[in-house]
Every structure is written in structure tokens, then in C-alpha cells.
Length: 251
Length: 251
Image 1 (tube, rainbow over the protein chains, first blue to last red):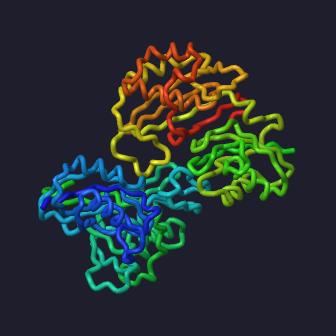
Image 2 (cartoon, each protein chain N blue to C red):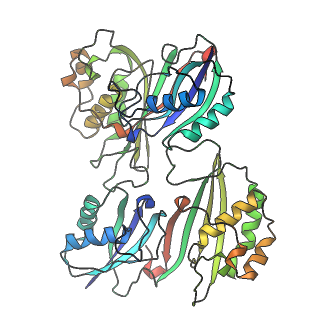
């Protein structure tokens, strides 16, 4: 069987996430699977690099599936984009090694959280920006971000209470950039826990507003208690930018 | 009475234009007027710099109205943005001279038409970009744009058949820029006829696709017949960028 890898972009506004528990809901994975199955005439199992929450976007989600169909990748991509709704697009379709697995082989992910720091709403990008009216101390946020990077047990920044697996992750970088009224927080790491980026962002925003001290971060990490961290930032500002694979699997 | 000028931004997707003939329709002018009247407790007449068609956007529409209310401009702006839907925002509210008229005193307008020249749809800006899959000869389009600039009778590029007023306008510049897969056409002039920018864009696209010769432009202008020009490009790619006023009225 052929193994096909897709590079996918979506505006998550209308969806209840990449994959959801309830089958009645509208999901990105569901939409893509239905279009692919109708196109290929066989049932497929589309494996994403990971879930994205309801309302979260992706500029570079990766997924793969196995098929017996002989259609070329280029033709497949054109057809699928024709049938998909306008808020989902396949940027690339390619045949990869049979053993490639989009979730298990991912070695690094990058998320961006975009904030519109102004009292005036942003009309054109309102679906992708979280508006924060309060003024923010960006330098203070940058200092705090430095304290969060590294290999830590991020349990305090995770919404899932019944975690059996390890909650240790390596957060390589949090890049904070300001361009006009837009502030972006780019998170790169080897893996992220459930809601981790949004809770980190909410906590960093509280530091930026002066509601928390930078030094609290170490205490929060050590506590391993969700209640110690800040509020979760809303989904709409979050976007999965890219998923990286080892050299032989590189996209 | 005070004369208040507003700088307005909107995503025109959901609206039947700035102002429409039928009162049952949803218009930007109508939305703003209702919010202002409820806020000020008096009826007002909101005068826009000009109409925009159904589905057309604005990054810098200008409008003014007269009021007896004593509320400060800053307070007015904050309140109105709070009550407006998320696809309309007031970027600025300021008191101007009593005689200022947003339409009659406008001396120059700039529109941008944005094209996504790719076979892969643009997910995040799909509401603001017209997707053109065919390859385009940009240099040829630029040469043709030069032939259209200047003071001409633009009747052939106007959709309104029962024109009594002059259809002579001065088109100062058509700037064509390519950035990656995005192509933008920026039109600056002292005034634009009904559908003029969209018909100019459609005609320039036909030149870019090789369906028309650049030299045809002079014949089309001379013919003064709508049928001679190209098809009208769709509304979604068009945005009113700015309206300029003489120095004493400058915004």
C-alpha cells in the first residue's frame, strides 16, 4: 500500500478541533477523511501529527494515510482542494516511506499565539488574533519566557487531570515579537501537553499586565498544580505553525 | 452642532455594501447609524465618502455626521466599537469644522485589488483575495496599466448605463506589486465610477492571461462601450484603502 503524507492548512473557527471524541461534531480530520474516501473509493484512516483544540488554526498540520488508489499525488491534491470547504486546504501531498507515521515520528512542533494589543479591534484578522486592551510590559514577558524554557515537568500547565504518562517536555524556545500593535509568542518544543501553549500564554499575559511576578514561574512548575498557573488564553489566537521530522522524513 | 468625522474599517463579506437602495438589506452605513443613534439618543445622518459595493471591504472609509451630543470623541469611539459587530471598527473619531463633508471634499481615493495567483487556495485570507489559478504575465499587465493612467473618459469601464454626469476621471496611478503568490493592484485617482476598479482589474487580468493585447486599451477607452472592456473582477478582492482631503481637512 502507498503511504501518502499531507501538509494541511485550516482556519479552525468553525470546527470542534482536528479530532473530537463525539462523532456528531464537525472536525477537520472528519472533513478530510470524508473527501478522501469519496475520492479514492475506499475507507482510509487519516493520522494527524496531533490534535488541535476547537477553534485552533493550523498553517502546517501534517497527516498521513495508506491507500491502494493509483491516482497521482498532484491530481489528488488538486481534487481534494476542489472538494474541501474554503477554510481547509492541502498545501502538499506526497508519497512517503511505508513506515512513516505523522504522530510517532514528529520530533519538534512550533505553535504561534497572536495577540492584538490595542483598544481598537482588528477587523480583518479578528478570527486569528486575541485582543488584549491592557498595556503589556513586553520586556518583562520576555524575561519570564526565558525561565519557562528548558526541560521541565509541565504538569502545572496542563488541563488534563488524569495524566498517567510523563508530563516532562522540552520547551526549546519562546520567541516574543512585537510588530506594531501585534504581539506574537512562538513556542518550539519536542511536544506539548493538552492546553499547554494556551495556559503558558495566559500566564505570560498576566506577567505582562503586572498581575504576576516573573519569579513565580519556578514555583508554578514545581507545584505541578494547574491551579497555580494563569488562565488559559482563548483558542482563536493559536495556530500550529509547523511539525518537524528527522532528516529522512523531512517535509 | 458638532461635526464628527469617523475613520472606519470593515470586512464587507456579510454586507450588501456601504449603502443600498433597499432598506431591508444589511448595510455598513445602516449598522453604524443604528449604533450611533442609540448611543447619542438623537437621529443622525451619516455621510460616507462614497459607496462601496456588496462584499467590498474598507481599510480607511471616511464618514461624518452632525450631533448635539456632548460626549467626547474618545468615549464615542470606545462605545461605538463596543456595540459594533466584529467586522466593523471605528479607528478614529474627531471633531472637524462644521462645513466639512466627507464626500464633497474628498480629493483622492486609493483602492487595492488583491489577487491570490496560485492553484492552492489561501485559507486565512480567503475573504480578501480573489484566487486566479492561470499564470499571469505581470510585466505585460504593468505596461497595460500605464496606458490606462491619465485623464480619460472611463465610460467603457463603468457598469452604470444611465449616466448623465461626466464620466471623465483622472487615474493617477495603478501600482502592480507581486509578493510571493499575492498580486496587488493599487488604484489612485480623483474619483472612480460605478464598478470601475473591478472592471479595470478584470480587463488587466485578461491581458495578463494573454486573452487581450495591451494596445486594445486605447480602443476600449475611445469606444465608451462597456461591452468592449473585460469582465468585472469579483467584489471580495477589493478594498477601499484611503480617502484623502485637502490640507485643511486632512485626516
